[in-house]
Length: 103
Image 1: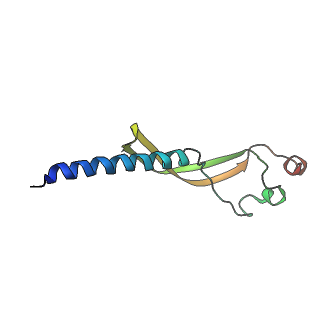
Image 2: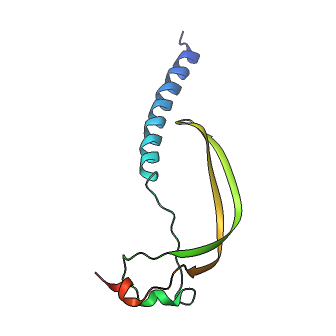
Image 3: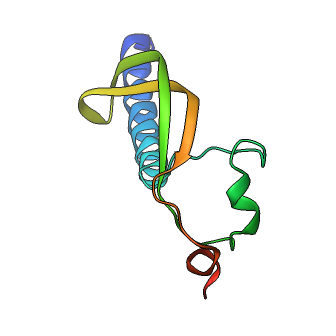
């Protein structure tokens, strides 16, 4: 007679180990992911003269629209994340075009 309970338990352990391995790879990949957003020229007109790749400081006003907390198999404690809508944006410091366009 086949011991179905043992077979399924062994399969579950193998599946869990594979899942953890896959999740660790995914977690490592996403640990370097930075949040990003897009703006239209009418929302921040100054950007049209900037060089791509340059950095500037913006003040972003947001409204929190959600909050999630969950447990993970491959991490202790809980993982929390928030969702936000951007409701306002402005340059923190006015920069001249030379600063934003220089190599």
